Amino acid sequence: MTTRERVRTTHALILRRRDVHDADRLLTVLTPRDGKQELLAKGARKTMSRKAGHLELFTHAALVVAQGRTWDIVTEAQTIESFRHLRQELHAIGAASYVCELVDCFSESDDDNQPVWDLALAVLRELDAAAQQPAETVPPNLLRWFDLQLLSLAGFQPQLFACVACETALEPALNFVSLAAGGVFCPRCAAHRDDVEPLDADTLKVLRFMQSHPWPEVSRVNVRPPILRRVESLLQRYLIIVLERHLKSADFLRRLQHLAPSTTTPPPAPATPS
Ligand SMILES: [Zn+2]
Image 1 (cartoon, rainbow, N blue to C red):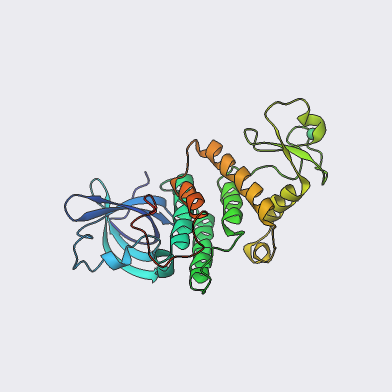
Image 2: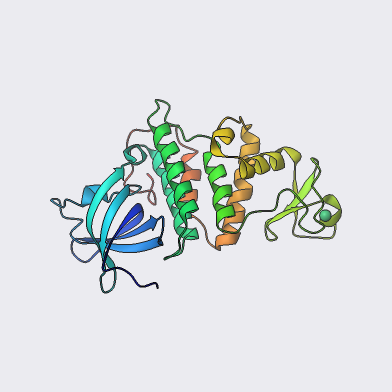
């Protein structure tokens, strides 16, 4: 732990909340300079609480935080970006929950990580803008682009351009991927391994493009659904290996794919879809 000011101000993204004591909430937030923090919002569950509205899930708020004994305490909160559309529609809730869960998993406390902060905010802005459209869909490439960018920032960037073993540039042909090794092998090197699976040239091309280009360019690429599904499958399995756990929100999103494209009734919580 670094030594702290007794009172400090910070921007924060509300990633997670849980009820504690009679009327309090414990918030898990991402901050740009101090990484992930657990903060106590006293009285936040009271109906008259002035702070509560500024501390909703997925909200970007400016906070005044006082040093506390067990947890530091939120003394003032002001909404900067409410992202309110992310709380109104099932697919948007699912996608925003996924972004927050993954950021939560990959963030440490007291870790200055402005790039992760910038990435999380950028993705939530895209999701919120999309949720305001009549079609209310999550932009198709967005979460996969987010996966790859976050993996890179967290130091788990999959190696997609040169063979993991011999380091020669990969040809745009059939190659082989090892999720355990975190990258792609050329056919020659893959012949000696039993932990690889085939990776077709189209899927590799999409993965590489998403890894190495900014969102405005990735958003304009029309990826065929079967290829996007292969990209998703690879990245989800890779994330499970890296994190050594399943993502609740990813399971929720997968179940949503079997529902109608839109519904206007928000569910009680992402973990308990109807
Ligand atoms: Zn090789």
